Image 1 (cartoon, one colour):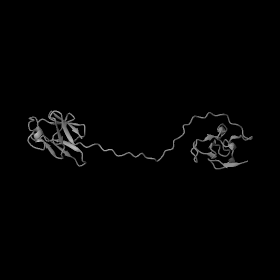
Image 2 (tube, rainbow, N blue to C red):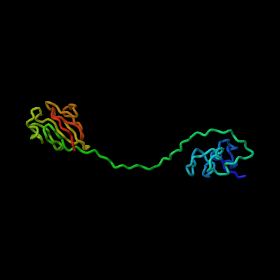
Image 3 (tube, helix red, strand yellow):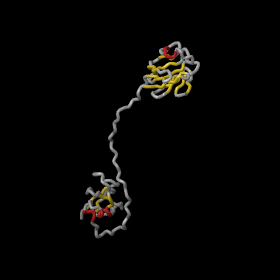
Length: 199
């Protein structure tokens, strides 16, 4: 008679047992020959454990656990539920290159057929600022209408300088003297002259 240790109580039991005769636990066995184990997966090879009483149906089971001892009675057959094999988690990480949004560079107007290069702190106005040559004939643009600037994080902002006819970001009128961030694809309008933010 060959004896092995019960994986639950560590007492010596016969190697063809279906249940531990010391603690009463139902025994599971590794079909690849690593003996009785706790749980559902073999701790040595990761193979799904089978009930010792059903090991005879598994062609890979050890011969020692597929024979029934003459002193033990065969327990009634039990349906074995289909268990999906557990996938072991890996520590593998996926590295992706960091993607940065493109930075706005221009305000483009189809109406005026012009493209304004963004400059940090640039003033938009009919009489003052960096783009007077574009707006000097636009009567609805204030003398000092708005300002484009970068904030401390390097993000572009538009500030309405209390203009008479308003500045609009994506068709929403801005409150005067408050900075609003914008990005590529947004529209900025000085009164009704629309510009598309472009790279």
